[in-house]
Amino acid sequence: MRIRLRTPRFGALIVLQGGISEDDHDDLNGMPTPLVVDEPVEGVISSSGDADAFVLTGWAGQMMNFEVDVDTRDPSAVLNVTLSEAEMTLKSKPIGWATKAIHAGEEALPQTGALIPPIYQNSTFRFATAEACVAAFTNEDAGYVYTRWGNPTQSVLENKIAALEGGEAALATASGMAAVSTALLTLLASGDHVVAMDSLYSASYNILSEDLRRMGVEATFVDATDVNQVERAIRPNTKAIYIESPANPTLKLVDIAACAEIAKNHGITSLIDNTFASPCGQQPIALGIDVVLHSMTKYLSGNGTVVAGVIVGSQAFIDRAKKGTLRNFGGVISPFNAWLTLHGVATLPLRFERHCANARVISEFLESHPAIQWVRYPGLPSHPQHELAKRQMRAFGGMIAFELKGGRAAGERLVNRIQICALAVSLGDVRTLICHPASTTHSEVSPEARRRAGITEGLVRISVGLEDAEDIIADLDQALT
Ligand SMILES: Cc1ncc(COP(=O)(O)O)c(C=O)c1O
Image (tube, rainbow, N blue to C red; front, side, top):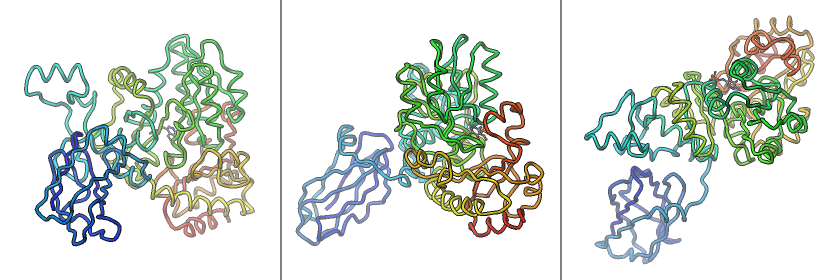
């Protein structure tokens, strides 16, 4: 018999994995899987048995199961399956990380049959009629206008990241800092106040301590590892709580759910930079956070080829950020960078497992090395917040910080001697990267602010890559000895 499948969702991706009854799973012949459906598609179900029901499993933004009764013995029968929006939603069940990272978001693409989302490397879009043009200007769903306003390649990426973070919507940006600045500029106005963690990526710290201050926004920096300090710093004009966990480069953690609750109790917005954990390491929205930020330059793109960022949050917040701040200030991602990032995201779950496995054994090696004073890795029982890490993280990530007994001089010696590991800033790359934050990533932060945040002169940060762990260990060992 033949089956025809129709969905109301343009370009919906249906992965068919149906079988025919329990003892006769001889399935769906002639049905390409995955299958992009916007026209009825046809395939042949072959069955020699006398089963009369089968289950199809489909995926269209999310997994759905649907059951249909049919006489599979009649070779001439044609079954028309039309899925309504309601059915696609009602019959859905959660799908796994790897499936999401590969398939999510791709229904936003115009139907061409291209398996890999193409790059729409164009700045503007043409309209067939004046009416279509007016419609696109007034209603986003009516089509694309201009790439600073949106582009199909960006949309695929945004939908994919929103699915991975469990947020309603996402907005891709030109860099991680464009994500941080766009989110803060969307939220804040002169006279507002922010409570921020004292251990932050340097440019985020500088935006809050200098750039926004010039515009009349004040920030109070607190040791957010103690959530009571966050609560105590809130004032009547506080509009946001801004944290990083794990923090760059100290690997300090914040009790994310507790911070989110404080924000909710005070009617203010909670923001977290989730770059170090990635969506695979931690799900801040599920813990109550309002806005999640990433430098997609790091784990999400993963290959060291892109500078990009993303904001994830409610549809209302993303609409404000997109139609106001990003459109006006212009920190938009290029279609090519969005496309490269898509390729990275597809392998994130797989890469992240390896980053975590490598980091675990390398952190243990470092902890046992006589040249090292202490090691900070959330997965080590010696991390002061290991219990919190176990509670709120799904995986501990690939970032390690450690202090050398010989201070800054020993750090310089180490980075001059490494051979496989690269002396480089950035993180989340397939290659192992080592840097000395006090002289590089955090050199623009004042020595006093560094001291308060715990960024000591001898602190070294490693972003553990995907090489063989024993090779990285051998490299570190020869460089430390
Ligand atoms: C935690 C964190 N947030 C934000 C950024 C800024 O990202 P980008 O360099 O993509 O602007 C970085 C960069 O290193 C970072 O480590």
